[in-house]
Length: 224
Image (cartoon, rainbow, N blue to C red):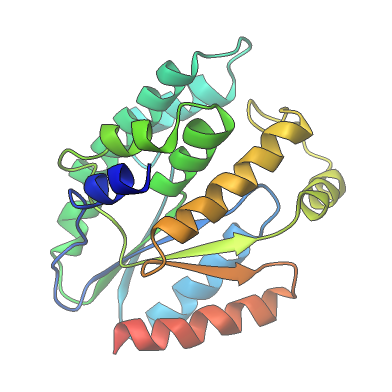
């Protein structure tokens, strides 16, 4: 498996865009992505960067329609069908929003979920296999990787506790059983092992301020 994954990694690339950067945030429900994205936006805006914040699935008219179709589905989708829906949304988002924005000097795209979510959700938790999902992404523009991915790591117990405190109606994925979430966490951690140069794992059980400080320090190195 290792050799095959290393081979597939050779098809992936990061944007060659001087002064512009592509960032993504990953983590299971309750990890604090939305809060940290706001912190990142402020840091970057204060430094004079133009910031475009997007989410997956979604970010375009086409992607938002797919998002609603997936998250409000009343029947289970076949894992491969589910995966292709995410890829369709992603390809459109890259072509329509991300790639054109990165051509603008001193701009930053911040994306709430990206390829690592697909690897964790469909590749690991849905048992499609990481190699299968990597293979599906090897073609342009889906083979584009962020300059940095922040994986906000929390335990299953912390996730369930934070979700319960929200008291919100659960969507298609949030309604899954604990085994699904356990596999999801394993999937994210495996991606961090496969792409150690890109993914920074952060203990998100700490306070939002502590998590934000770790990201801010790392961001300084990237922007330099």
